[in-house]
Image (cartoon, rainbow, N blue to C red; front, top):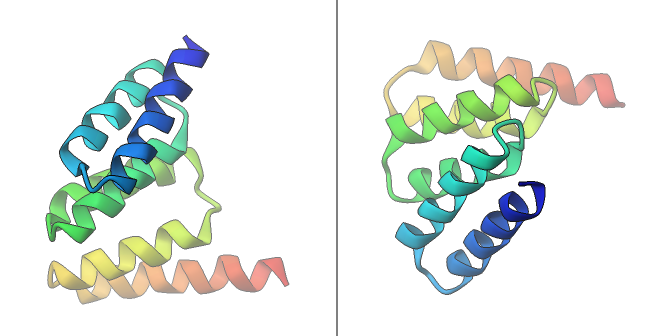
Length: 107
């Protein structure tokens, strides 16, 4: 199960490199089915959706990633950008503040 999950993830990464986002999303979904607590496929899907300007789907994927890695400052930063694009400046600001807080805790 673990090997298949990682295989799907790496297949998705390869598909992104070939500009095959639709196929990559399928691979990342398969990876998440097999490894629901593996954060990276959620992040990759969120990035694809953000690039496609499918912001609601992007937020959903960032939410899933944050549930797994709630101390990952970059996730809050990226979600803040998407929330801002969705016209949610207060939520975007809250995420940006969380990003800054987590970053300052590292130093």
